[in-house]
Amino acid sequence: MIDEFCGFNLKYTSQIKFQVTESLSRLEEGSTVRLTEQNFEEMSSGGKPLFVDFWATWCGPCRIMDPIVEKLAAKYSDKAVFGKVNVDEEMNISSRYQVFSIPTFMVFKSGEPMDAVIGAVGEASLEQFLKKAIDGGSPHPR
Image (cartoon, rainbow, N blue to C red; front, side):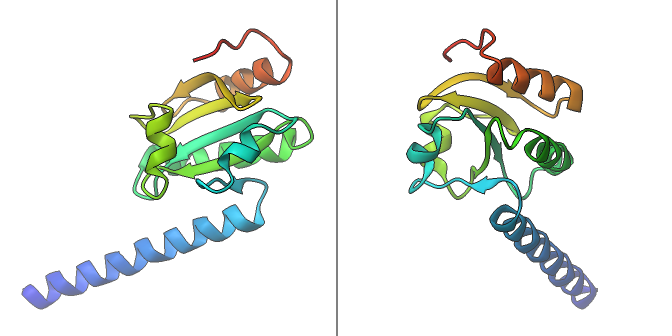
């Protein structure tokens, strides 16, 4: 029984490592940028708004939202930069912006957070949030 239990754990751990590796490679190759302490300031201070997805590998709702974020990134890549912050790896960034729940989505303009949405929301709601920020609607400093 212990061997079966250990075998299950090893198999499960292997699956988690695969998922983490797959997600990281998509961040490097896809339409979103992996945000770190080294590049966050530069990316958030650019000419385009920065849409940030605060996430973690173990977060189910984050994985559910990932295809939606990727779809929006492909659709709006000419109007905004899309980035992801892994809250487990970049704790300084998430604590600086008081991210206590994930997924959290924020839009930054000129280095300042303008607005945020917390939780797994529908695609239409997230797109409306993004459009409001891109169009210069009334996002308010957080």
